[in-house]
Length: 73
Image (cartoon, rainbow, N blue to C red; front, top):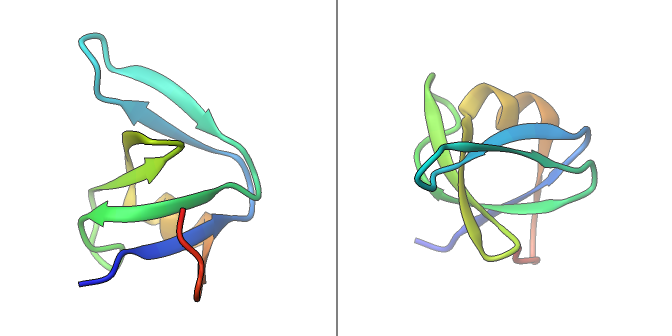
C-alpha cells in the first residue's frame, strides 16, 4: 500500500521512540508520512518526518493534518 502523506495545519507534538522517549514538535506546514496505523481509530500511529520514525496520536493527525495527494514526505 502506498504511504499516505499529510501536511500539518498546526504544530503538533510527537514522540521520538529512542531510549528516553523524547518529545518532538513537528512544525505547521510539515509533511509527514503515515507508516503504521489507522487515523480513523483511537490510539497512536507511527509517522515518518525528516527520516525519523515518530509516534503521535491518530486524533492529532486527523484534526491537525490534511491529506496531500501526489507528494511524499
